[in-house]
Amino acid sequence: MRELADAERIRAFMQAAGVAAAHEGVCYLAGGSTAVLLGWRATTIDVDIALEPEQDELLRALPRIKSELSVNVELASPRDFIPLPRDWEARSISVTKERLLSFAHFDPYSQTLSKLERGHDRDLEDVAAMMRLGLVEPERLRELFAEIEPELYRFPAIDPTRFRAAVEAAGG
Image (cartoon, rainbow, N blue to C red; front, side, top):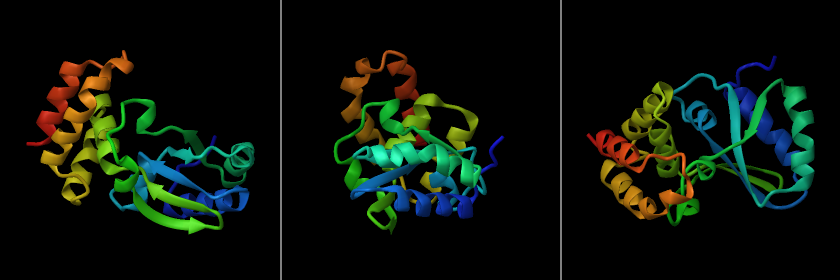
């Protein structure tokens, strides 16, 4: 059983991933990792990441890193669950660079949209925290939802009507 990841363990993961990376790239942190590093949660079950570009050397090192640090690492980000709005990379928040690998929080708007689509209690708490911290503005969130709405058919598990209602409710 792996342990919960606190900020120290996530930073240790970033250092180890930076050592394992053979090429320049970006490792986007999402979900609980963002919540922990930005301070509204103390721990997370998984360190959710997306790599741009994917690197075989780093992917092959992940099982060893997970074992050494006793941390869960998942290849998961908003792009796995919803269509992404344009310019999501530009809205991502830089964290640090470890050797060749840059780290950034995945676009807060994309994370918020993904969390609203899923709608679990913890997701909604994260949405409220991102809005409270000024990472997400309700009007811009609605605009970005309208941008991705025509592409929702690509994700057949999504109920567009329920998703729209969740976005509208989040905007207060």
